[in-house]
Image 1 (tube, rainbow, N blue to C red):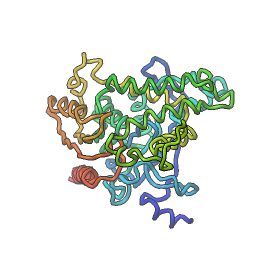
Image 2 (cartoon, one colour; image 1 turned 180 degrees about the horizontal axis):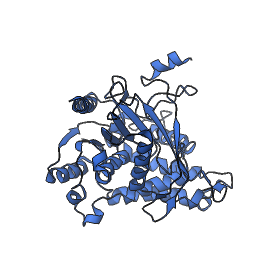
Image 3 (spheres, rainbow, N blue to C red; image 1 turned 90 degrees about the vertical axis):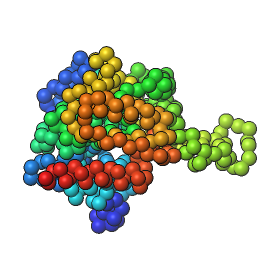
Length: 384
């Protein structure tokens, strides 16, 4: 398959990951600092002469900087939001310059627990600091500086990526013209923290975890990662979606009275778990789920989200999905109400979709038309 063929596979075409190096220490919210780190990123489209058409796309838990397009040597590795981003798509790369970043502490090219600690010559492992949404946003701002972007036309993300959008609007209001906050919550509920803790305990109690320094043992805590992924994946789908996809269908049409995979849903979860454990780093998973747990902009304002968002000046598009029980529409409406208290420009949409939390990643004509219309508005503003 040559480059011409690849461009027909995904409309963003063949893309190349890049790395940006940073020498100045980044002070982290946990009190530690990290220097000599790198961020992996990709870009799509062209930055205009005034650098005013840039859009930052923030990723959720297990995604990365590979947001759209394909790699020349991996034609089947399509970006995780390729249906959203590209020429003629809702986030149109004929109009906008899109940046995707792998967050600090990740395992897809940015400095993280698997990386070599320059002070020891060994992988960071368990000694890699806990990072937060605030830390990620500060690191992304440094990348924007390197790219010559003083203000983003929009910052966009779903789930944990949407939390980063909220933080951008709080920490860098003058650098954020619009924020697209999709399938989000202003903080995690106790139930969501509980799910994350079960997933972490599966990893922490895996005999191959070795207190986070499993690299030296040449092993990975696959069993823990598999269970963690299963727990997470269950929360991403609605009950109706599971029933529609799998129901109580038996793989072999009969009950075998065993602990092997008998139901289709069991087979699906094990497949997803095996795939995930083959490419994701356990130390990264622990840190990302903790970042989710810690995010709570209202905490320092006595629980008042409106006060936390008082300094935001961006226009907002907030989108929720009716069957998303992990980040329910009620949680998105908390964000909307807080913004309205501050008399901010807010567009809110609640999409009737059966897919649960994963709906923000899937094709839905109403959802995509809404995003396309919002970006058309941003483009028109930039030309007025």
